[in-house]
Length: 127
Image 1 (cartoon, rainbow, N blue to C red):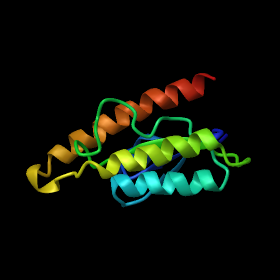
Image 2: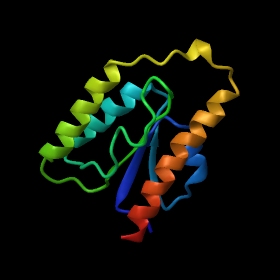
Image 3: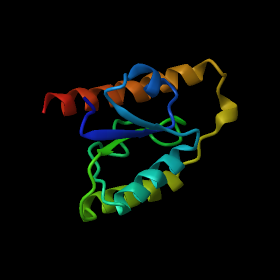
Image 4: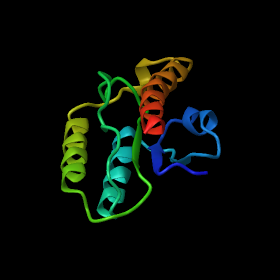
């Protein structure tokens, strides 16, 4: 049985870690583009379930982001919209410099994002 939420992510580790019970929208896009995709879905009536800037990892410190939103659509949630718009503005203040990291470091970035998401998934599943 599918959960009542979905995950929007650019982290290739997330769909590999989660089984068919979860709806995962994986896209090979930037951190900021993940936030914009979440914003688009909020405009469609989905609501934020995890904070788009969760953890103490700034957008310039990782290329990966995973955000949980409701599966069900309702009226546009103004609070979710305000949070995601603020997150997009904050993201624009930072630039991730991919050239300063070795390729193997990207696996670490994926694990950091996964760990933050895993905690949110565990909380959501406990409800």
